[in-house]
Length: 162
Image (cartoon, rainbow, N blue to C red; front, side):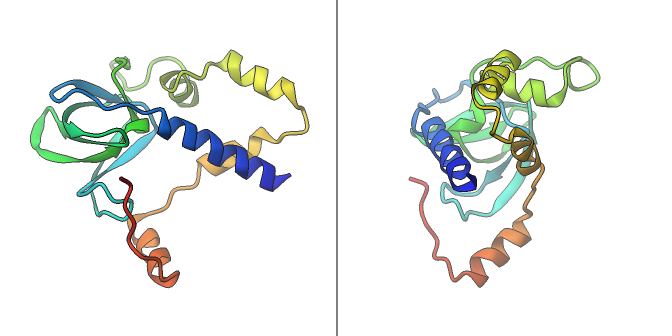
C-alpha cells in the first residue's frame, strides 16, 4: 500500500513539473507553495541563497521550462532559481495580518488549484487511503545542512535539474 501511495506521489509531482511552462522575463509571479528556497544555480544541489514564502511577489529574470530565476521586487540584487511548480502568475491575495481568513492548508491548496471539494472527492473515491499520512509528510522539513550531509554520506554526485 505504501509503495502504491509513494508511486502516486511521484507521478503527481512529475505531472506538475512536466506541465510547467516558461514565464515571461520581467513578469510578476507569486509563490504558490508554503515556502521555497532561492538557489544560486539550476541544479538540485545548488546552494540556497534565501527562502521566500507563500504569496510573496517575485520578478522573473530568466527561465526555461523547469526552472525560473527570480528576484525580489524590494531588492533586485537578491535573486535565485526556483522550480516552475513553485510559482504562478495568478495573484495570491493576503490579508493585512498575513494569510486571509482561511487556513494555510486551504490557501496552499487553492494556490495549486486544488479545492476542498476536490480533496473530499479524492478521499471519498477510496476510503482505505490514508490522507492523514500526507499531512504528516508535508510537515517534514529538511535543512540545507541535513541535505548536504545526506548527499555526502550517500556518495551522491551532483545532478542537473535541466
